Length: 219
Image 1: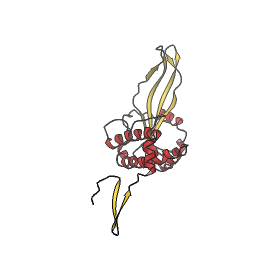
Image 2: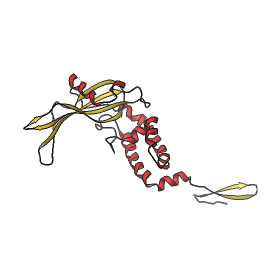
Image 3: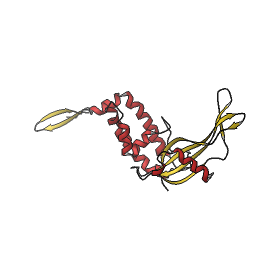
Image 4: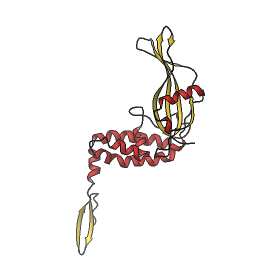
């Protein structure tokens, strides 16, 4: 007897053939039918692809951001604490259950390539201004600051819709290690120096503005 059917498997029991149906797990069916999971899974797929292809010099970021200037999928993949915190906000428990396996896949990829991701292009140093950057980081006391810097000494001007300047800024960063993180990775904390436009071609006092924090390899 030779049955060639993907969903049926013949099993010989004594002198009788018993046909058993291979049942697709309910969770897999729910995941494939869950539109919320599918949206997030598409983002995870993009993140996995970018993480897998990353090598130093390829680009000045590791993986793209999606919401709130961050890639929550990467953070939840490499950190058990971050994953637990993110999963706790979901009212539908099926979404975290579906996301867990794909985040595990992302974590395995990131552990291979993320260690080689370091801050690049922040070669302008200024001790006083780097100290000012620290004021934008609320948990700075918990961090070991490895390095800091700016992309340029020149200010970039942001205009309003009518062409009048709104502010000017310079891109800066702090390269840090937090011993409290459970993933073992460092962080690049992006902080801009900002001066609000005061009118008449003048700008106000310099202030730091936190942009985002992203995982990175350590020295």
